[in-house]
Each structure stands twice: as structure tokens, then as C-alpha cells.
Amino acid sequence: MKKAVVIYSGGMDSFTVLHKALREGYEVHALSFDYGQRHKKELDFANAVCKQLQISHKIVDITAINQLLQGSSLTSDITIPEGEYSVENMKSTVVPNRNMILLSLATGYAISLKAGAVFYGAHHDDSAVYPDCRPEFVHAINEVTQIADWNPVEIVAPYLNASKSDILKDGLAMDLDYSQTWTCYNGREKACGLCGACYSRLKAFEAQGQIDPLTYEVH
Image (cartoon, one colour):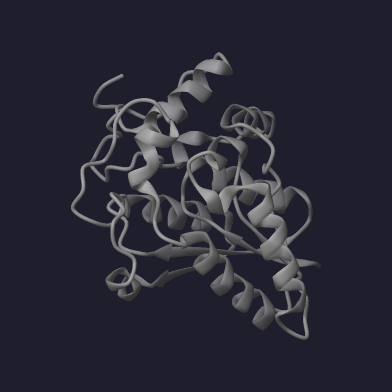
């Protein structure tokens, strides 16, 4: 069976990517990262899903790199932005070079497993805010992973040109249960319903005429 590493945060996008890889017949090795994100709660969701699916799952602690990667509201003492998922509003949530770092580690893991692909959940809605979710970044990093080792690895972003609503639509068609995911950038007991991540998620459910199964503080 062909093998793939899936970068799995525990959020709804990577949850859908994980299931897509499974549906495509891959032996999936899920890989999650603790990089000091304040919404570390997402890792608990990732762990629970992988246990339920009985698939390989590693949670890797890379919090030591936070001394190098300052200035993001996801990892530093900066207020999480609320409201519209736009460039100016969400810019503070950018973690410097995060996806290049995570993809590099995932590629190394894939090579060690003799896996031919690394999946991650970059999508069109993120491309405006996060440069490392843009098509030009994905294509460029894919060229690098083809030549970085004797064993080429393909970077697969199945929703690169899709919206969050499109991802949800695909997941609903697969009968996925999104109560098993965590999106909120605040790691409290309930999703806040106000931060940009919650805003984007709720808009996706609204666009699909569905009710989000998560419980929110404000909705």
C-alpha cells in the first residue's frame, strides 16, 4: 500500500485532508506539531480522531523554536483578532515560516517511512493571509522536496484552489463528523465564536446550509 504523511493539526481542513488521503487508499501516518500555539486543544482532537481510526499518529514538540519565531498572536502575548478573515485583520496570526518548517520535518519523516507524499491543508481562503498557503509556495516547495533526498517526496495540497466552504462540502459528502475538529484560535472549553478562525468556519457552515456541531460562547 502506498504511504503518505498527513500534517494533521486537528482542525477541520486537515481533518478533511486526512480522510481524503485515506479514501484515496494511502496508508496514512498523521503528524501533529506542538509549536506553542495557544489553541493547543486542537492536538487533543487530532489524537482522539487518530485513535478512533487506528492510524499511526505522532505529536512532535517543537516549542523550542518559539525563541526564534516571535510576533504571532498564536504563540505570543498578542490579542487574537476577532471578526472578518481578511489580510489586515488576520496578519498577526502568521507564525514566521511555519509551513516551510512543518513541511520540512514532515518530508524527513516521509523519507524515513519510504512514503512518497506529504499532505497538508493549504486552501484558497488562506492564501491571502498566509504566504505559505499560496500556490506559488506549494509548487516551489514541491520542486525542492523532489530533489532534497535520494527519495523524492510529493507535497500534496488537495484543496489548494478550494475555499473553506468547498472543503466542508467535500467532507460532508464523505459523511465526516466535524464535531471531532477544533478551529478556534482560543483554547478555551468552548469555541469563542468571535475570532477570525471561528468566523471563517461559521461562514463555511452557513454557505453549506448546515449547523456547526461545535458549541460556541458567542454565535
